[in-house]
Length: 338
Image (tube, rainbow, N blue to C red):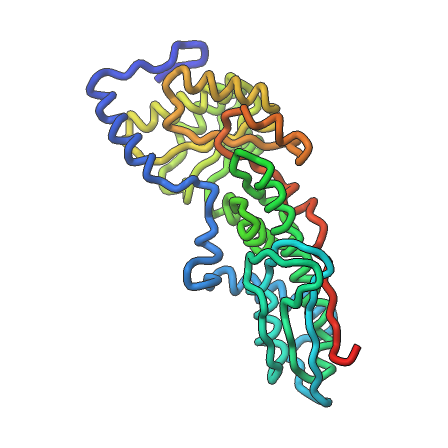
C-alpha cells in the first residue's frame, strides 16, 4: 500500500493481468447514477415506486380531510386537464393511482403519455365522474402533474444544454417521485435512498475514521476498510481537494488489485469548481487510475455556468437544481360547459 506523498502504485506484470480482467469486468457495469429500473421498468412502475406513490397520494388526500375513497353522490359530469404552457409531461403513474383508488366509478382517459412533449393548450386527461369527486381531487391532480412535469421540463432544459450527464441528489421534497420525474426529463436518478448505495460524505468519513485521521489519510483508510457487502449498488466518496481525490483513486485501485473486485468507485468532487475538477481528473488519469473510478462533480453548479463544465472531463454532474429549483408546469381543470 502507498501512503500519502508516495508515488502512484506500480503493479507487476502478473498484477497488470489481474487488473486488466478487473477493468474489463467494471467496464460492463452501467453508469452507477442510473437507478431508474428501481422505480420504473419495461413493465411500468415497480411495486416499490407504486407503494411510495400511494403514500404520497394518501398524505395529500388526508391534508384535504379525505381519508377513504370518495363515494359517488351526485350527477356525473366531465372535465379536462389542460396545459397552459409547453413542457414535458410527468406524474401520470402517480395521478393514475389517485384516479383509480380514490375516485371509484369514475372513468378517465390519458391523451398523452409519460415523458411526452406537450404544447400549450393540450388536453392531457379527460375525467368523467360525479361532480363531488372531481372537485375534491382536481387540485391534488393538478399539484401532482404540475410539480412532476415541472421537474421533467426543467431537467430536459438542463440536459439539452449539457454535454455531461446530469443526476439528481437526495435533496428532494417528494422523494422517489422527484427522482422519477428527473429521469423522465432525461436526467439520472443517482441513489434512490440512503440504503440503496453507500455514500461516504464528510460526516460519514468523520464518524468512521480513527481519531486523528484527516484529509487524504482518512479517505484512504476508510475506503480500504469498507466491507464489500455494505457497498450496495455502488459506493461514492466525497472529496474536497486534489490530494483527497488522488488518494481515493489510488486506494481503490489498490483494493481492486488485492481483492480482484469488480466495483468502480464514484469520486464526488464537492464544490471544487470546473477548473480544479479538471485538474483532479487529469491527475488521476496521468497516474493510470482513471479506469477504476467514475468522477462526479457537485456543489454550486447552476444552469448559467454549465458552459464552464464542458471541458471539465468529469463523468457526471449532480445538482438539486434539477428538482428543487423547478417551477411547476401550469395546468388547469376545465369542467364541461365552462
